[in-house]
Length: 335
Image 1 (cartoon, rainbow, N blue to C red):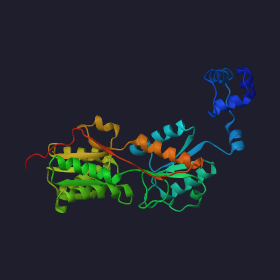
Image 2: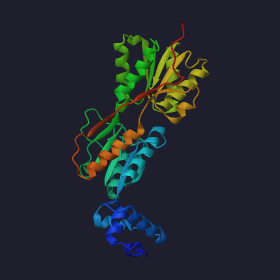
Image 3: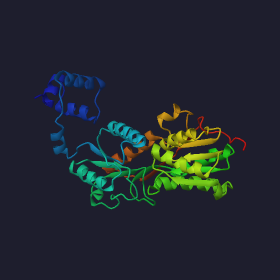
């Protein structure tokens, strides 16, 4: 078996120099680094990660608990988290908890047994069992997206109140005076916060509560379809609709078409997330965008500081959303 000594001998440097190059610690010249990597490639040297972790008590592993990997939102967020972790020299263990609080708790125990150095996760919901788990006092962690009100733990999330306000402000500026909203599950704080921002902005603009119709959805296409069916049973176009994610917006637009209504001529629709499909959907969807890369990078950076024992001035980080205007919104047609 090829050892680090063999690499050092072929490269003509010391073992400590090889170690510095591999672990990216300390300063070495570009010429020396090239010699070391060339020797590693020739000898096909692979470090013994298990032995290294036993010596240093560092596994360079992070755990990620995902509520539902089938969700485009969480799949995309996981992608950016993996990239951010890789840039920091960590590998990721991903656990799909399937929106199940018990499974979420079980996977946390598995990650602790695997000796991950830190855990990053969005909660399943307010029903999460990870509110007061002894394990979380022994290992650094960061909560993403689905935080609790008055959360004291390290968190990174979107400004969801601002997201609701952006959607309402855009539709008001277009001249709409009648509104509908398909929320996410109300047991999840992000849904409540987005609704708060949306309703507050409308009411402050003088919109009567009689002209606002709200139904609960599930962040899935079918939830958008069912929500739109209920809305159209109670409201006659023209009106403006805010869906709390793009998937429900897609489902809602499908139902509108099936019932003979046009978007945006009869119904203006705003989604949330900025799913890549928004650009190719017909019509292209206006949406409140989440900067996934910023959320992931901020979360991993915060987690790494906690792992390294560095002083963290701000443990609660809020990322601002922004509006992407496309062809699914327009001024209301005349009655």
